[in-house]
Image: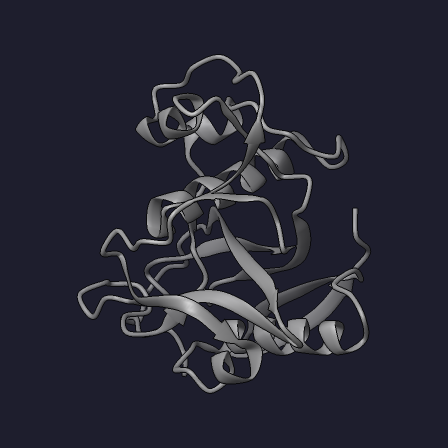
Length: 219
């Protein structure tokens, strides 16, 4: 399945975005949190996706726990992945601590009101992908993974993602997804089978309308 979009006469500049691929061990199986986008969405309607969305201004300002590695943009993208996950699933990836300066974003108030700091220490950058040039809606998306991270809150959809649930990896790979989501699930399955999620960062983009894959060192 590929993204449903109208042809575009001029390439649109991709917007920075981030997705959080939450994973948990349930007995001997690994499950992934996914939901189905509503049919009315202009971008990839009816497809199963990971929680995520575009980078917002306040994602640069919010205080997070992180490893200290990476650039300011990477840390902002980590924050975006955590924020979008809360907005779409009700789950807060956070730890108790003294919140940083308040931002104007309502979502971050949900963290500060609970005395929580967004926790990006468990996040690992697995892949990045750029939407095809002919799409009228384009993103440069980063896919972060987190296995058994600390989660607060209750799983409850906001209405943006339907059929929101933890799916065994084998089941998730049978759901209707676009090609890049299919690749991310396959990459996770391969790494989990090999004993971990670490490794080079996959780079998925398109050339002449065809997917092109390469790997980059993890920064």
